[in-house]
Length: 109
Length: 113
Image 1 (cartoon, chains in turn yellow, purple):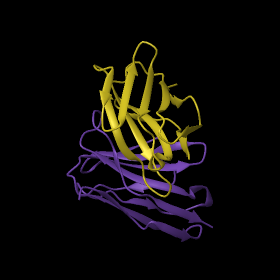
Image 2 (image 1 turned 90 degrees about the vertical axis):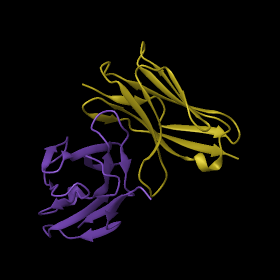
Image 3 (image 1 turned 180 degrees about the vertical axis):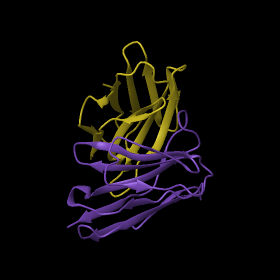
Image 4 (image 1 turned 30 degrees about the vertical axis):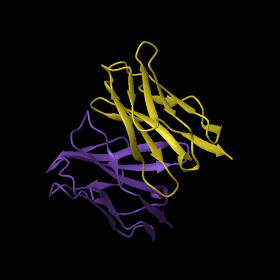
């Protein structure tokens, strides 16, 4: 069946380093992808999205890369800060939206 | 401020006592949806609505009802709650149903004893 998954449930990164969070999806018909950040006690917060006609999109300190050949999505966070500590999950949306289970990002001092 | 508002944030109830969790959005979004989030299972869709008076079952609709009488409101109703409905619930909305991001509320933590 369809699935959206992340490679690692937990990722620890030194403060100031760049973080890369990965996601694999299985539905090659999906044409819209989203990254969310969920902090403790809060709802998922939209970070950045990308459509299937693009392979890269940049926001403020974040970049999303889409590789449709291998059905892989990644989120890069530049100069990781303590406030980036959260669970990050990807989602793909066609007629239905499918969420991955998330990667918890720990920031090491 | 554009937002999705859920109430209550926390609710403890007993088995069988009907409850309603309200959800309201002020972004004039057509699409609204309810999810439950459980450890190890991620976000699972309960019900969704493409527009006023249009609702459909998601992946885990059993034990839940919804209504969409107005565009801004999408309440979740548990007619006879059971302990397996103890969970963290999120309401979300989006402009369209396929190429726009969902905006989430801050969640309702429900405990059914």
